[in-house]
Length: 443
Image (cartoon, rainbow, N blue to C red; front, side, top):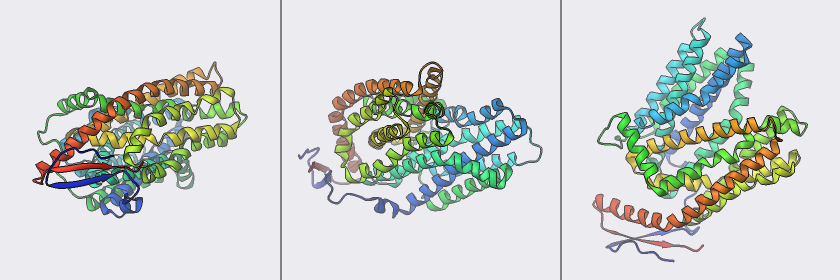
């Protein structure tokens, strides 16, 4: 099917067929992407290591589960504040500079933690500050990824980043605990500080400097309000963000993995397997989804896959065993690969000057949704079997996903026209001839 968008002297064909499609090898050949990817591994790995090391250190000193829980909450509470209030910095300031500054600040805060006889309340406060600085780094990295990768490679690069993040989150706690057991918490914290320094050097030396996206330079509050208006005032962006937030429903099993495994007669190993298989499906399917499926097909499948990601959990109402539960969680994770399509559509539609703020709002909302979902599921498990709670969460998510899928189906044609207009406009601004866009599909 050919869809003309403009008439002019130059003719560009955007193909959604497999012929000529970019590959992961093409993405990994880009030096800036490799530097950004390595920086992510170091930065996220350092975050998880610091969180686990300090939590174990505090518990070892006090034997207080409450203080240890307060320390571990640094992974959520300050991140939300940083995501909402500080992510806009990566729009108002050069994004590479924001990332390097965040790494330097985190390395300095970790160095202060290593001072002898540091009070526990000061350690917890410093850990909260480290976590607060993380969201602007994450927002800058997400925003600059689209600056580094052209449109046809962005989905592949985002897949690599998301799969790396999933792997680090799942394995980070275990590796952090092992590191603390081998070298002790203070040395683990020192290693964490070194990862931030290495990450900053990689970004500084490997990523090209670019000017700030928001040339008007509004203050933080104006930037935040503007970002909220852009994201929630656009029906397509709002729908894409809500599709991303659906993860709170199909990730419920991760929040109640321990009681779920205990109900099946298992222990920590079984709980770890349940959490791991919740991620394995996405890790296995996402690369195929982005490299073998055309962008238009990914957009069409996004809504139905979101429904299936939640609905795959409904059969747990029949109280399946451990192996069957692992299979269902992996299946739900497989359909969760739709998040790549949602991410790609979101970054293509949002204006560059609000891109980092938009990612910050998306991350903050997801964090709140996950926290509420985990808390409600944990409370429900007190009176209802964990498998039933999982099924209810999946069912509710499937209902919401159906509404979003129908909404996206109605919006998709308008979104396509919007993208075509902006491609033509960008070419005109660059001084090029008007562009005729012709979508050629064999699917």
